[in-house]
Amino acid sequence: MHERTAKANVFLREPTADTEEIRNAADANGDGRCGACRAGGGCSPSSAASGPGQRKRPSLTAELYPVAQPTPELLAELAEASRRLDGRSPEEILTWAVERYFPRFTMATAFGPEGCVILSMLAKIEPRVYVFNLETGYQFQETLELRDRIAEKYGIAVDFQYPDTTVEQYERQHGGPLYVTNPDQCCFDRKVRILYRVTRSFDAWASGIRRDQSPIRADTPIVRWDKKFGLVKVSPLANWTKKEVWKRIVDEKVPYNPLHDQGYPSVGCRPCTRRVLDTDIDERAGRWTGFAKTECGLHTD
Ligand code: SF4
Image 1: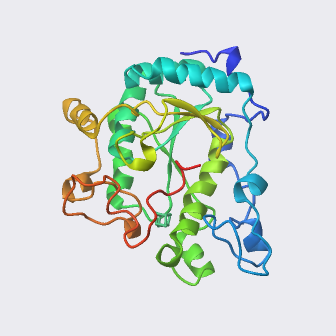
Image 2: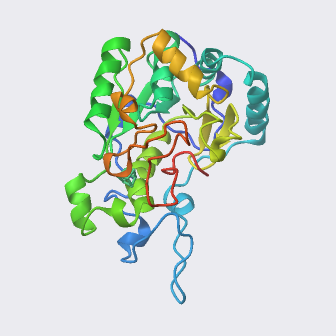
């Protein structure tokens, strides 16, 4: 439907976009552990330094997951595109992204309201865009079933991407569930690591981030270089409000997670998501209760 433009191939690294290869790709480390863990030291991706007298932990992103670097021309192009697209509709932004990057354009979705709305738009613009879900093994049944309802309505089969270990294996390795004691590492192992594995085969990805979701997301540009994962990041809903997202869901009967009607403003993994009484407060409330953590690491540099 859309031809990829010659300009799209501007990265230092040349990934492939074969869907089967993506589905079957092995983790760069093979055993799901970082270099520090394999060396016997253990790690916490959010902690840069070790204790006194200990070797400084390696930078996971730099050493274990080298990513593509943009050319100055690409950065200038992205800045210009972001300015130009800022007042445009999400559909126009997605159309630009598809024309510019498809088939090397992807999206990760946790089936939040924003992801479901973007899927409904992609169904009209380019339903062949590869969309995947990070299936940690800890997701709600309602979330897994939403994947089937989306497929039924739009014909888009969101692909589950799994960590290398089952929940049982992972908890056995760590002597129990890590989300209780170290959710940063758990998110890294069961989400971020898989995102590195998948995104290395693409040039751009879409996110459902909105600027009004949380202070950390307030400055989200429409298009930018994602230096953490080494590809272009497009946020077609950056300018939309929560109200606009839900209006679209209601108007077009977009399938959504029924947990939102049961007091969950944001739905992540079951053990790290709680009901909240006042859903007008921070939309990320109810996630990682008891920890300062508000993001799983997919959308932070
Ligand atoms: S949200 Fe919780 S259970 Fe899911 S990967 Fe992160 S820490 Fe683990």
